[in-house]
Amino acid sequence: MKKRGLIFTFIVLMFSVLVSCENEDDENGENKDMNSSFNENESHNAGQNCMACHKSGGQGEGWFTAAGTVYNASGAAVSPNATVKLYTGPNGTGSLVKTIEVDGKGNFYTTSSIDFGTGLYVSVTGKSGSISKMSSSITTGQCNSCHGSSTSKISAE
Image 1: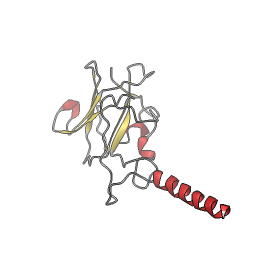
Image 2: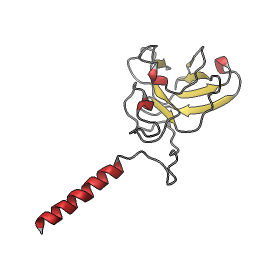
Image 3: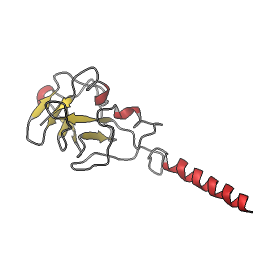
């Protein structure tokens, strides 16, 4: 009898572990709506390619369409509470497509649908008001797949 109780307990424990590790989808199996916000502190893995895990079928919660990390000018520390904006034209021109708040750990992410089309231009405003702009357009939101590895880190003060 004691053995049955242990087996039942083990099965219940394994089920709860499996359920807690599932990707966070809504009740229809669609991508859960998630956006970083100022002062939030639940993100993790600053500087890593967020979308290596946060993708359809991935281990991370939600399927990010744009994500990355913003650092201070020296690149030595994260720059929390900055703002990332995606425009259709260079240097903040054209239409504003998406605004993403950077959280308290310097990370930003969104699961919102973003039409990158033939390319969007990025502008990052630090909490002090300094603005950094990308001169070339992007067609993917996997910011940390390049920044911090093959190109300099995203920075704003």
